[in-house]
Length: 168
Image (cartoon, rainbow, N blue to C red):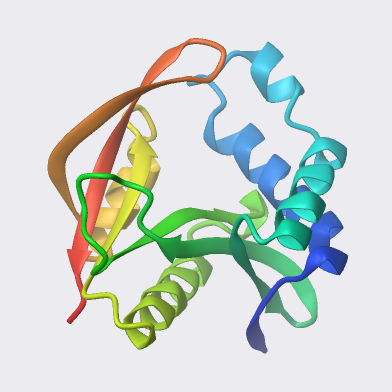
């Protein structure tokens, strides 16, 4: 049984565990072991507790048979070159043992539907250039790279690529 619901500050520990486990696996070989070692469930729990209490972001949790296995963060696009019709998937994460089983597709479909219901006509997301598995997933979901790239620093300079989807 699958259930997706919005998270609140009481869910911070679940979010922290999912986020940190996903990062450690997805970015192994892309980011340094030192950076990944600093992404702990405890640190991420503190972040999510504060973010949800203060309304910085909107997170939702995917439950499979009552176990929290995935999360998605959605909202208005943060990109200054996109107008108010653009929503954004700020992040999507699954516990690694649940990858490639259809749960990511369920989460992203849910997120797109939520953004559509809010009146957004397009969705954007950013993905690390070296995260080929995620990039393939987004393309299979209908997203295309729109040509936008940016450099971010996560222990070193890395490139992010923007993918977009027209929803309405």
